[in-house]
Image (cartoon, rainbow, N blue to C red; front, side):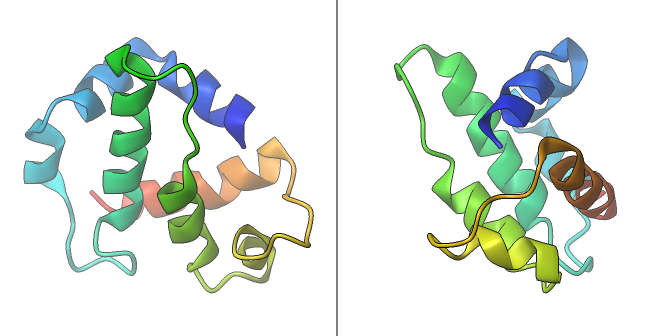
Length: 101
């Protein structure tokens, strides 16, 4: 999960969009996630680029993904189950983030 978040954070335009607060104006609060995926992703991006932290633990983002009701996502709520590979995570995250707009 960390490598995927680092990779996504290095896309300049989307990262700049999420670092600012303007993205909140475009949130779809009527989606399944009520915009929470986008908000938590924005928080991760802000923490990565703030320069305040040597490392971060995206636990709130992980919890949001885990609460999507998808059997693959259940592993994000468990400390015993292995996390899915990056491709599966992206296939879960991308459509849910798109729904938030």
